[in-house]
Length: 111
Image 1 (spheres, rainbow, N blue to C red):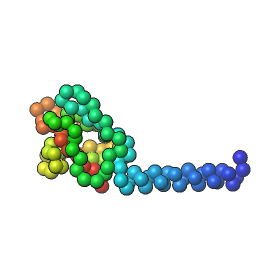
Image 2 (image 1 turned 180 degrees about the vertical axis):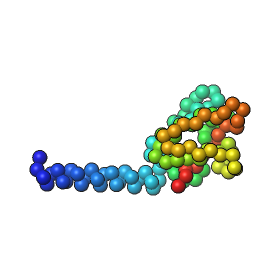
Image 3 (image 1 turned 135 degrees about the vertical axis):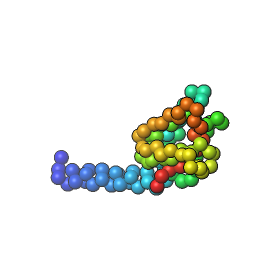
Image 4 (image 1 turned 60 degrees about the vertical axis):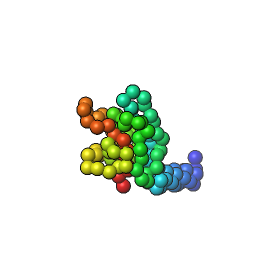
C-alpha cells in the first residue's frame, strides 16, 4: 500500500470519528437506554434525543434502568423531570430501585 493511500485512509478514519462524535453530542444519546417495568417487561430505546424531559413508557413507573449510551442521565420519580428526589445515572451503568422506594417515571440528559 502506498504512503499516499495510507494517509488518505487515516485521514478518512479521523474525519469519520469527528463526524460520529459531532452527531452524538448534537442531537441523540448514541446507544441504548433499557428499563424494566414492575411486570418484568424490558423496554429498550435506541439513541433517544438529548433534549427535554423524557417519560418512561410504563404506567406504574420502572424499577430498573440500564444506561448504555454515551451520556449521563438523571432519573426522576415524577413524570415532568422535577423534584429533589432524583438520581444521577452515569453512562454504561444500571440502577435498580430499592424495595419500597418510588419507581422512576422520567429522565433527562445531563449536559
